[in-house]
Image 1 (cartoon, rainbow, N blue to C red):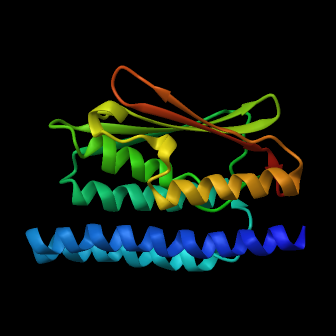
Image 2 (cartoon, rainbow, N blue to C red):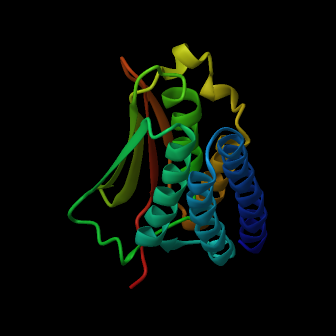
Amino acid sequence: TKMAETELIALRSQMNPHFIFNSLNSISNYLGNHDVEKADEYLGKFSKLTRAILENSENKWILLKDDLELLKLYIEIESLRLKNKLNFKINIDKTIDVENTLIPPLILQPFIENSIWHGISKKETDGTVLIEINNVNGKLVCAIEDDGVGRNGSKQNLNNQNSMGLKITNQRLDIINKTTDTKGTINYIDKKYGLRVELSLPLELKF
């Protein structure tokens, strides 16, 4: 268990630089093409985001409420990069208390990033990312769904694990399964337009 926890800390340390790198890349693109006022707004959001990441980097689990705030900031930054063509919605099961439910920090972020970079950004029109959090048979099932171009349109095969973030997430899930004796899963569901990813996690409560 100690070895697994140590490995999980190492995986989180890989996740956060990956997350920061992609956000900085987005800021760089925005600064190169837009005005100072918008760039300042962008940097303000990013500074708030990086502070929250650093504060949560040593935690194995954080409140769902706090993690959703992190994800909102990330999506808002990406929306600025895409000239506000990106929309998002968050639907949470009424039986879930976001101030008592725990989730591994940023475990959903790579799927959201994938939806934005490989799905929405390749569309000529606006796109939407939907985040759903449900309690299914005592498990926390988190779904990330987009109306982008889909895996065929982006010529990307998620099963090849080309994304470092997605690969790390699979490794994190393996460790969570071992340390909590659960059978969390990741399922990819191709839609007519876009992709839906469902991540099943143990339902952990703070109290």
